[in-house]
Image 1 (spheres, one colour):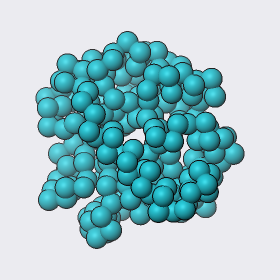
Image 2 (image 1 turned 60 degrees about the vertical axis):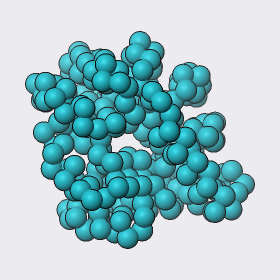
Image 3 (image 1 turned 90 degrees about the vertical axis):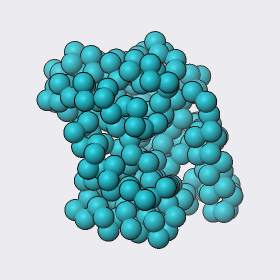
Image 4 (image 1 turned 180 degrees about the vertical axis):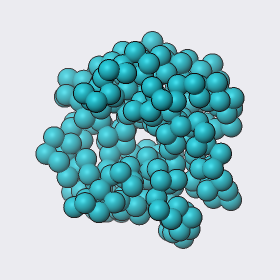
Amino acid sequence: MMDMHCHLDLYPNPYAVVKQCQNEDIYVLSVTTTPKAWHGTNLLAKNCPRIRTALGLHPQLAHERWLELELFDDLLGQTRYVGEIGLDGGKEFKRYWDIQLKVFRHILRSSAKSGGKILSIHSRMSSNAVLDELSQVNDNLPILHWFSGTKQQLKRAIEMGCYFSVGPAMLSSKKGYELVQVMPIEKILIETDGPFGNIKAQALFPWDANIAIAILADMWRMNISEAENMLRQNLFSLVSKHI
């Protein structure tokens, strides 16, 4: 089992979450929202070979934390994973669009110069702009987290070779479910986006990714074991790619 986009450091008791992830052998991509959060979050994964910590600067915080880009660059050599990054076109963040773009472009270029990174990308109400920026820098491997664009934008993302991380909250919505139906099976990974992702107002934990597996198995007309194997193959294919 895996959770390819989870904010481990933002749970009320992150060490307990990490312990259960270890007990259940869950692969976790632990994303961060600011470079300053990197060290503490990375310590959570100490001695946990199946937990990887991503270095991020969330677009919703770009206007407050853009000065941390220098720290971002200093830390970049310590991880193969970058996230959560991206753009947010929501009305409460659109006024910071210019600084979001500056931050995103810097991160894409720095990641490419550092040898290429696996990216976990936020694209809320900004899918075309995110894809435009990704098309300018070819040396990274993008995972579009909780993609919510149009089917035409999805088609473009597929043609660009993007991966997609989908979770129980996304799959429980009509639009999200329909988008996942169009995604290439071999490009799908699962996530929870916990503790922000939730079902019936209950925060999701990494082991709740099982909910997504059950939904995908039904969608793909597979049994649970076959769906798990497919997702595992997708993960191993992703991490084995030479960027």
